[in-house]
Amino acid sequence: MRIGIVQLTSGGDIVDNLALARDQIREAASRGATLIVLPEAASHAFGAGRLDSQAQELDGLYATGLRELARELGVTVVAGMFRPADTVEREGRAFHRVYNTALVTGPDVHLGYDKIHTFDAFDYRESDTVKPGSELVTFEVDGVTVGVATCYDIRFPVQFQDLARRGAQVIVVPTSWMDGPEKLYQWRTLTAARALDSTSWIVAAGQARPGGQEQAGQSSGPTGIGHSCVVGPTGRREAEAGYEPEIIVMDLDMDEVTKARKTLPVL
Image (tube, helix red, strand yellow):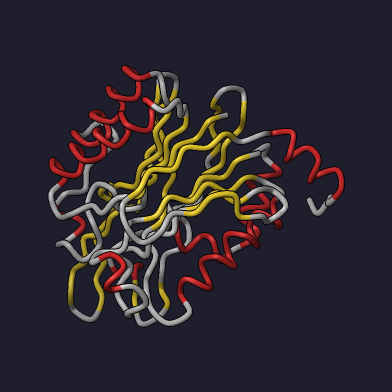
């Protein structure tokens, strides 16, 4: 399987973000990728306005735009977006929450995974504006079962093990990671750990760092740190981006999963 990772910086306008995504998906597809993964919040960046203002269902402009492109190119695309969820009252205020959804779309699939673990950590409360999901999601590409997780899910090994037990050999992780002290170290450690926990390929697509290398290491909200990566089923980092926008294209060998699960039967 040839995968593509699109590391980009989305903004606050869903139409502009769709155009950016389409251009980058075309580039990855032109290099032979059949599974192309974009970051969390690819439709609307965190910190760029209220998430509910541009939340759409899977039949909305953003999701259908990517579906049409994926069908045209004969590829499967995973991209972060937001869908309307509910309204909750907290401390006298009404919050119109959304689902943090990883869209999965292609010639034979069009569905969403709703992020299960909301990012309530490091003085940030994603659950104020995002309703947690509850269902694991897998899908098929080129005869390979692929599981889905999103960003903060990477800290919860059971989710990755459960996806592997459902047959996932590859787990894609759209992400918009927070920068700051030790955050890059944690990201690298966690992606390797989840590959080992599940003896699966981890394909993690992150938002590029706003401000790029010049802002690297400074504390920020969950707007991106770059460093999208591919980690093999034995925990070895096979590819990694930097802080800037970038596309990674790489072939994944499923025999590596078979070997890892035979020699390291943690499941």
